[in-house]
Length: 264
Image (cartoon, rainbow, N blue to C red):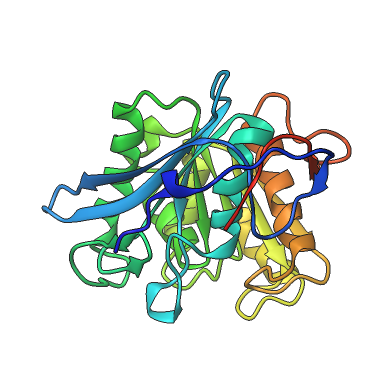
């Protein structure tokens, strides 16, 4: 059975409580589908602020599906649980072709990042057609490859402001793609864990020197999967700082919530 995000039950609180990994804050959540140029139906979820203006839109590209990556990979799940309420940010998550999650399974099969070009284009087109403003790609691991390969060339380049990369391995993405980003002039933020399995901060700084506008942040103590609330919260702060006018604030996003909450 497909998970329905409208099934979350929100309960008022008598006092503020700590935001934990399973905390779900209020938002307008809906299951969505969109179709790629080559006819694949992709499934996902869109989470919008329950009220007020949308400050930014995240189009998330998940880690490698052949190694457990999907739209519910924990950083993206927490982004959808928190950012609409805490920062007015819309979060679009979806399964690339052939990827399954509790939301459902997208058509097709894994194509090593080649056919997935159509997936990126379809997701961005969906965001445009829904009128979602200030659109940013956010890629994690394999998702960074997709962002780098397809985000700085049309049609995507004309429809997004820039990208945030989490744990880029730079396996499929090459210097050619980095030079395309450089030529585009679009902002690129690169968050690199100190103990990454594939690309650590020193080498990342050398590789991304091809993109003069890239902002590279090495995160002490972190690993490729950003396990732990400390690192997930840090990532969400960095993303909000980059994509919204107000940013996350000097102290970062709130770590407590005083309104109604649900639990995942």
